[in-house]
Image (cartoon, rainbow, N blue to C red; front, top):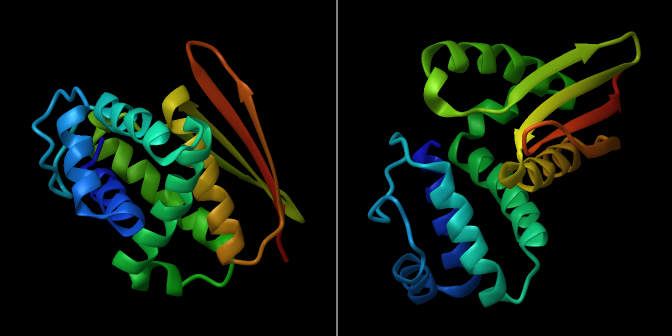
Length: 177
């Protein structure tokens, strides 16, 4: 898992509860890494899951709610960090079409990154996004997709269902012009 996700979580925790909570979270959570994350580094996905699991009761939230909040925060974090990326798109369909192409390139270059499977299927008046993710990432993806749809003011239908081997499948449908 790329370090930028850990950077986003750190920023979220500090924004909501301050640096002392982030430092406490790092010391209280059993991690495979030291707890120092650089944006371009690769880290175990289990560390992100462990941090979120440890954080949820501290904030008085259910794990799934925190994961969705983190996904929404992640969208805003990335849009602030890379403003030129989002500003070039008129709508959610344009953005996801570009992400579909970008995603293919990332998977070719970083096959070890553990990314979810992603397939965008255009039709005449709507798009369907088929996304398969591991259980810990499912709620994060759901929060991120909802926030992206909100950003582009696009109503969407989002369905999450269990799939094989502890994975979840998303079916997302939204209209386009």
